Image 1 (cartoon, rainbow, N blue to C red):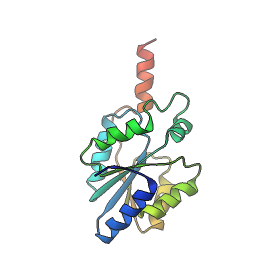
Image 2: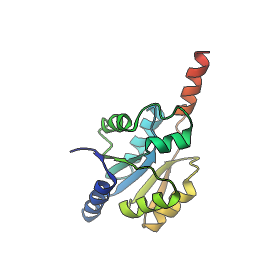
Image 3: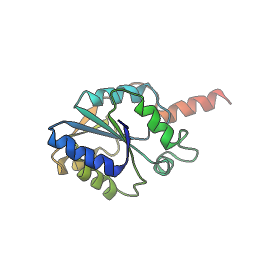
Image 4: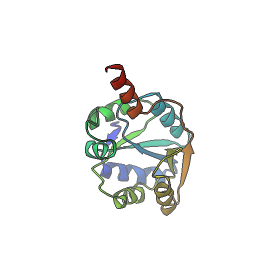
Length: 161
C-alpha cells in the first residue's frame, strides 16, 4: 500500500472509510525538520481514531508560511519520512492552497471525523468551522514542550555564529 497519496486519492479513500464506519483523523502541517514534538503530536492524533491522514503542505506554502530558506526538507522527502511511521496511515500531498476556501473544500472532500491540532493553533477557529461543516469535531492536543522547527533553526544559527 502506498501511503503517499494525491488529493483525489484521499477523497476516494475517505469515502471508502466512511462506508466502513472507520473514524478518520486529519492533521495538517509542514513537518519540515521532523522532531520529537511532531512525533508525539502525530502519535496522539492517531490514538483518536482508526485512520490518520496527514495533509502535508506544499513547498510553496511552507515558504509562504515560514519564510525565505524554507522548507529545509523538500515535500517528497518530508512525505517519505512521515510514511516511515507505522501509525500514520496516509500522507496527503497538498497542492498549493492560496486561500481558506481551498482548505474548506479539503474538509468537505475528506469529511474527517476529527481534525486534530495543537494548543495555540492560529487556525483553530477556521478548523472548528471546517469540522462542524462536515459533522466532525476538533480535538486539541496539548502542547509538547520541545522546540519548534523554527526554534531549532535559531539554536543552530546561534551555535554557528
